Image 1 (cartoon, rainbow, N blue to C red):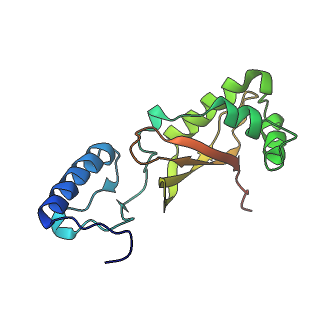
Image 2 (image 1 turned 135 degrees about the vertical axis):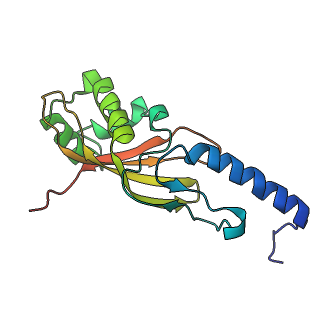
Length: 168
């Protein structure tokens, strides 16, 4: 056994596995296209099957966009990494003094557009969502938003958002 590892009886492991599967099934199966593997197919670490298209952010209706993420990063023209994002969002009418408008637009973007990539991280699954963002000026730029669903939580949290490259 590796250093720092703890042993667990087969009975306790099976019970824990069953509870985990029920919790994941309850959270993810209502989302069309996400399937949790049954016990006989063996749930493997980092594995969630996403079949077909039209897969949405789990619990997108509960998505969290923090004020600090918008004000201090996405709409901050002086931020080391956020300045280009701030210029982009400003071009479409998003403003720091009405930061809530961008927060609501990003929540809607996360809930209504499709997941294009899922990556398992040490904190839980990270989802990339791509699609149109409704802007205050009426335009709809293509944006990629990244959401983290931390272990033990049910609401995805915005990590970042940025313009998608337009393919010619």
